[in-house]
Image (tube, rainbow, N blue to C red; front, side, top):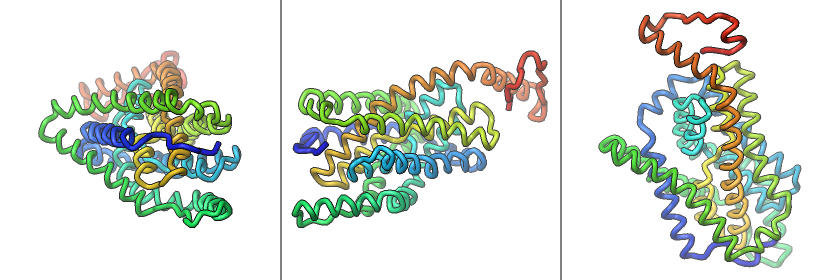
Length: 338
């Protein structure tokens, strides 16, 4: 699909940028310095989460781009999504899925900061070949410009979106009540952003939906689903408790869509910008749907081990941290109660 007109106009871009800043501010309002300390206290879970987030997801995106034979611009957009840190949406889904919320929040906090280093490295590793293809296409079309991945702009974009995150953390430190309001607003605003972009495209750019080949839809859906599967499998291979598996699975598959939109708008020019934005918009829309189904499944299968885990914690508060709760085998079966 060749983009012949701009997906969103400058006024819509300004409104979208404002909404993204609100989302990132709300994300920061949900974090505290203690979350980073928790990350250091869970080195095993955090390491596995790091491998899933920055090891598996970029590789999955790279593999899908080649398998589906995406155009260079869309392949770069998909790889960019694969290289993103986790977002606050994954924390919400981890909570409802009876996963470890503390681990999910720690992974989000750590991956957001590590993205400043990891994203440029991963993009250079996985997307440089597609960038060369795109540059060759531009030269063949008679363009005087050369395309290169703007690593400096991407880092600057990440720094810009991290600033409101830090502002939200400061608000949380001095005004927890207002921070809770900002956090709730961010969750609502994330849905509004997705609806805003989809409705804008539906009303003003209907041809985007009609001209989008099936490969793009498959890529937008499968990158999250495969991320869930491989994140859960990696945590299982390292024999982590079930609630950690669910948290790592969701944290792996759910990438920070607002950051993708911000990076694309700030770092790339038309007509490539609109092509990349469309991939990010479709991913952001489909990940909410797929995450909801995965969360409902995790919530159902995780009820027993979650209840046993909470019972064990209560017993340890009552009888000491070293107290080991023993359940009859007929009650717990093969459930891991750690």
